[in-house]
Image 1: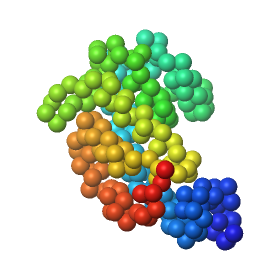
Image 2: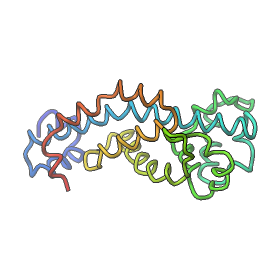
Image 3: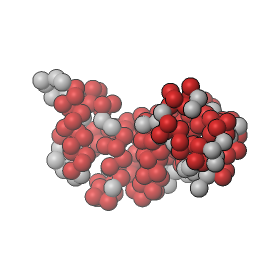
Image 4: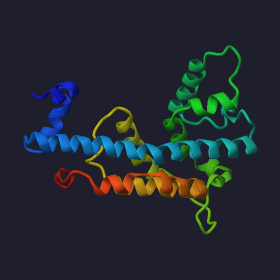
Length: 212
């Protein structure tokens, strides 16, 4: 075992060795590609999460109240309610948290829960206003949820330093950009200008193509 492998742990590096048939140099190249691609996806994930939560907050604040998150008509998902309670607890203030403090404290999972089927009525009534196509057409809830599910899984794997190279990363990146463009065309333009994904993907380890 090399010093680098020892730093990663035999268990973690063994997956990359298995993928390359025991070729250590190829395994290190594959590991490197995984880390660099994970790094590049932080940019679109960052912009997607920030724009998504801000658009949801803006619309619900207009439709219900600035503290819409305390309205029982909005909270229809038990796990989401637990996430809200945990965020409030972690803020540690004896006073009810202000939206400016609470909104960024809520997890990506909390925000993506708004696209579950239990929110279809709220989506039809108001949440559809968070986004539009380039031509100004209204979007359906499922047009978001079908993309957000796989993106959330990749985000969680990146957050826990797990391999993502077996996923369809170009499709995930394209879906991130599409969602951002629907939410904020200017944010999508910034993201494209500042993202390194395409460049790093072009230089990826060739072993990625052989992954199961």
